[in-house]
Length: 129
Image (cartoon, rainbow, N blue to C red; front, side, top):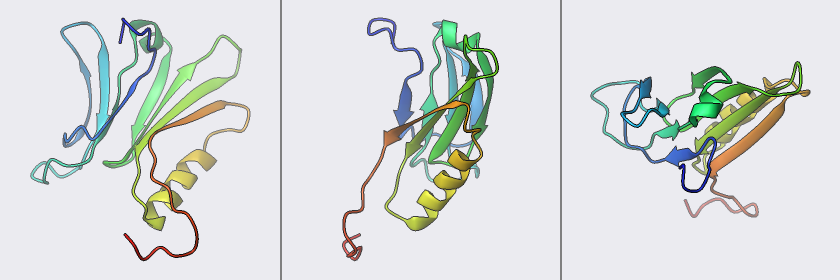
């Protein structure tokens, strides 16, 4: 992370359960979102790892299940927040409806960044998956 000067890298397929915020031995913070049930199979999961600089501007973060996490950061511009949404997508409409709902709640004046493992559906024939 430091070597490549990444400020808020996203991590997909963490395979962790629960949603937590942890401080690592290296000093970095880890925000992760997995299955809510503790005994659920360790599959899916997403995380964000804000750098020390980004951590100081963190306004808050939200877990949206095992496939979507959102964090908000203050910017240098007064009244503007940067929202980072990291996801591990499926091709299911339910996922995209939920993602659209989360994006729609971000104020238009704010900067919103969507990143992650995004699968695509092309055409009208969705029978392959």
